[in-house]
Length: 419
Image 1 (cartoon, rainbow, N blue to C red):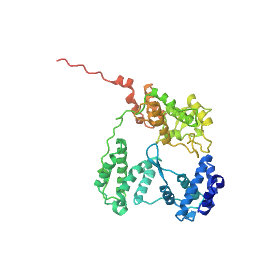
Image 2 (cartoon, helix red, strand yellow):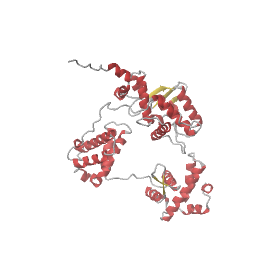
Image 3 (tube, one colour):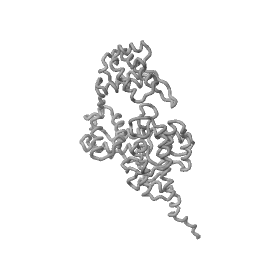
Image 4 (tube, helix red, strand yellow):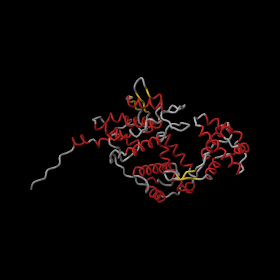
């Protein structure tokens, strides 16, 4: 198969002499099943040639010895170019091919599986995360959020994160890190940073890894309930977002269906990308969104506008793929869309439509949806049910923008007292 994709005789000779020779045909045959275009397959084949040339130059003769370091060193040797977003990116066909072929060699058992690196702080971090998951009952994604706050702290400690040095950790060292870290963080993120560190330090003290409880060395960041307004655009401006999707293209049909579902139901981006084909009950006229953030699944009526947008996308825009998720990437191998991609789609629509909003992600549409529902006289319980909130307090922030009800309970302005 590689003879069809690699037309240069010299390049084919390099493949034959290198450590990848026995596996090149199998690799190209496996990636061809993912739906790559002929152009993408051609790039992967020639990228494999570049990687094989590099391996031959450094003296690698056995493919079973390949590891992540070979790929990282190869990519580091590639030229860079500046992208439109003004950051540097490695160029060259081999950058993507090197990752793909190493993954393939591990899949077929030629190369040993990846060994996760062992850090000096792994002993404490792993035990704490297991405690959060199994004893604190946190959700599937919550331990990872906590880890993203605590792991940089342990990295900052360096060698002092080892068991024999960690016990001597001082309050000043902890406070110094928080002060440096918090300078670039928003208030809510600073709050989460302090909460995560207090949880970790308290756990370490309870297990005897610290001589005193350093959790009290960090003051909580004050964040008061309902101290802010919902961060969404005006409801009447959302139609301008829909107009930005060019429905004559595959991407436009997909983006229009995404925007229509977000505006109609006010769901989270994670719920939208988790939507599966069997969650659309066409005969029943209903759509079922999965639960998110410990909430409840949401079963809503399938409106004609959303049904039409989804049907058009499924019939004329969705790539053919074995995955059951509805919304897919446009490029092979057509993986399910990530929540971050939905944020990018919505943010781009805000920018194109020139819609003014304090926040331009998919959650801004959720805020706008709930604000409109409150203004229409929907009860707080009804709004909480539609948003999937288990606790009414999560929905109470939208009462702050219901001017009519606030005006009804407002006290009259006191008259001037005549002396």
